[in-house]
Image (cartoon, rainbow, N blue to C red):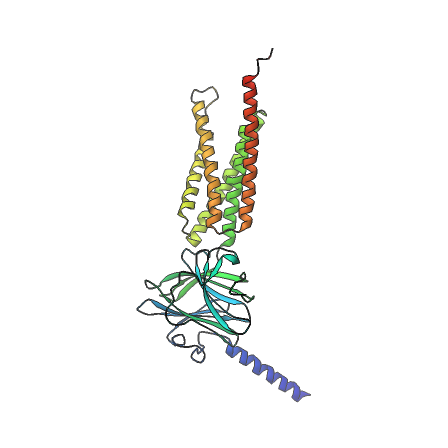
Length: 368
């Protein structure tokens, strides 16, 4: 009984040692299973994230040899190259073992955030004549490929992701987990930072609620609820100030997001700054509001009304534009579309009622 137990312990120890020896590390020898030039001992090596290890080298012709390894049981493993730090618009090399045991590696273009917008055999990465390879060795998968760049690669945002579901007809399923890394190929250093998806969602939600919900409601109250004087005025002021504060918080979140990812969204950013300036001018105008009997009050009214309308119009455009360039899902598009539709229908109905009321007052004979 004791001998059998000892034999079992020894067998388990041998199995654990065998598995451990197959776990990849920067000291592993690739020459036994990877073809040249990916099995060279001259490759730089850097652990990146979880079990992901990146090996790389560059030559004088700006050709980079890259080997990505990760623990693997099923599904796919990918590395993306981003221009602006965002997933949308980047190109990726993805490897996996098919259902028949055949290894596959393909380039994908990430046109959007949904699976249908991840396009196989498209992208902006230039491969060389050296055929890419995928090897399953032990408990790890190895993606090996070469890329040709127009200049030496230094700082580059890399995206890493994996899924446990095997692609069907090269159609990628949604990733189980992901991260982004700012990697310096010249120094071999990296700064791993998970992409600030929550910060991006906060920016969008605050902007929509402040500039796209509260401010339009406050404007509607000012135009169509004046019969309830002075209650309409207090509601108008409170809601507009609340909308400005929430919208300002959205701008602050947007600035923080830009400092993290440095996204190339100049038009969205420029419109946002202009809208913020209009909002600040409206706040200043409130404190400089002349008395009702003042001769310049009508000019102040004209300025206040039309600047406010311009602000709301541009805010609606910029929110829709932000949803588009931010790669938000259909739920954001549908949600804001419903919100905008409700506001437009309400304004149309109330404006029609208002003009009908004014028309009746003009045509009706004076009351005795």
